[in-house]
Amino acid sequence: MTSTATRKTIQPRNTYLARIELTRYVAASNSFTVWTATSGTVSFCTDALGASPIAGLSSFPLTESGTLGTYYAEISPTYTNLLIPYVGQTIYQVVRAGANLAVPDLDGVVPLLVEQPRYV
Image 1: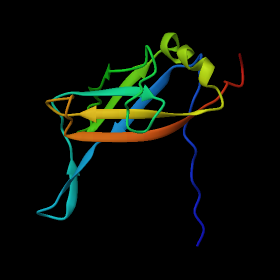
Image 2: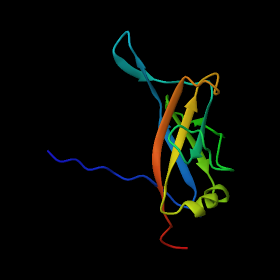
Image 3: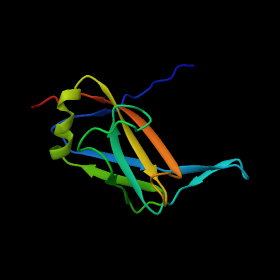
């Protein structure tokens, strides 16, 4: 059997839609359930743990999309342009959700390759 992985990218000079479906593991039922957080943020960092946020690209508030458990943040080119020095490098989209974001109930990390848009 073969599998194909899709590479996620982010491009300076373009709006980026950070969209994530949040689920949480429930040990009692051994299943995942839809997460409905009281608040959440998305940040872009140089490390997967979120300890090194990129200046100007952290703590964007997440908004529920209307579909239970699906949240998004629209990041404008004003902010994505801060990624120009990272072209060709991998950065990390870090999502944190819960009542206390300093000690979040939920963490999610997505690696993103910063690439130059085709048309500049």
